[in-house]
Length: 122
Length: 122
DNA sequence: CAGTATCCAGGAAGATACTG
DNA sequence: CAGTATCTTCCTGGATACTG
Image (cartoon, rainbow over all chains, first blue to last red; front, top):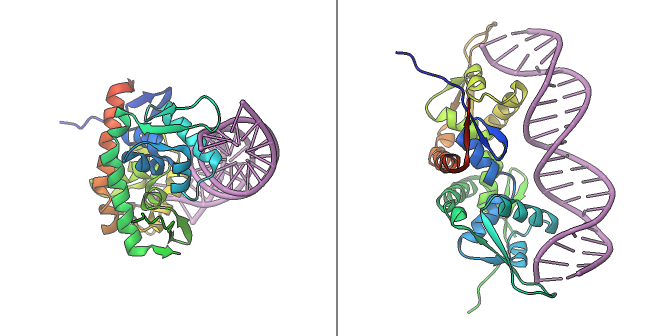
């Protein structure tokens, strides 16, 4: 009996992926997405809260990443005021919440690495 | 009693990170690394095996990513021949193996996404 | 406050051809 | 077989200034 090796690809949002890991990384990969999502696990946050929490991100990048996360259905954006100063809150969707175990798993592994070879600054 | 918010950064490999998630993503993020690693969980693989398994990667990219993973201590590269045709095998290091639960967690979540919104091609 | 606009640099990754 | 070499494109992300 021979092992079958059909090379099947998966189409998601009009892009092709070779496995489910690729799809996951398309949604949470990159330098900032998973960091933003981690901070949203314990509740909704305003734009500036996230900006301060993720101290090394730029406003532009934060904005772009939030838009992408919203587009991918992982977070929602709610505006609470009509005139400046604006109040906007970001929150995980139910779909986004299914990511929580994955994200904490990533963060915990990162902590192991940091404890072993990282150096705390300041 | 006030909550402290010391903004401490972590230095890893001469780069600064704002949290452990960032460090983890530095090591397994990007388009291909986690995919390569996933295939190495169930045992060592030759270059061409990986190349065929990850059908949409290019030789150049596979080569670069393998080098980076080796540099980061996640995999080892072993050469078994002196003359062409070469036989080279890649294998997870003990450190790389600690990633297994994280990677399967990512893959499983990706599968949920794929089942819900993905479309299988061919 | 919550972003945009603009400009720019570097790296990731693809295509293709070649080699020890 | 297991890569390199070369060239190119695209995207991510940074810096800074400005706005409803």
